[in-house]
Length: 206
Image 1 (tube, rainbow, N blue to C red):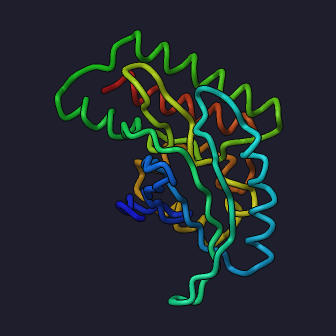
Image 2: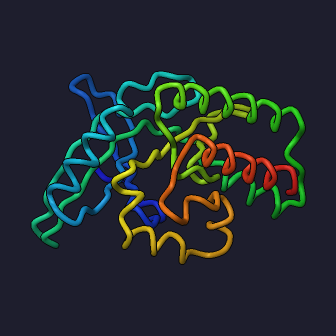
């Protein structure tokens, strides 16, 4: 059952869904739907994304399932990524709330955030996996000083020129997280570190 649709990004729509088990339990998940140009692109992106199922880290959002589906109503092919739902919002909302209240994010929270994100990035980079789309809205808040990386992107999708054009034409606020080389479709672990530094700067200047 679809509960709500979150604000869509350049790469796709995000749905909050609820699954009822046979025992009556209700579990919430996030499904990211990414429209693909054709079957080959969808299959290639699915193949790349399979590595995300292997990630097991306390500060990385767990991926539950990946699949490709066809929407008859609009005649489009979608790659769907099923992720765990934190239920507590994201870092972007936290920063916005602090700014509206003219409050600072405490040094303790910032230090814990930095430690958790560096550890999570080190973990994925050791496995030759890059986030490619690191920004506050893709970092989940799971506690007062607990955070998780979410919404990873594959190379195939991030080098789709049409989607990329939409992304770079977003407001200056969204572009500010992107490392210079990513505008030329180049992604490395350094790109993720650049984005993390930009996020850290935003947190310290609330």
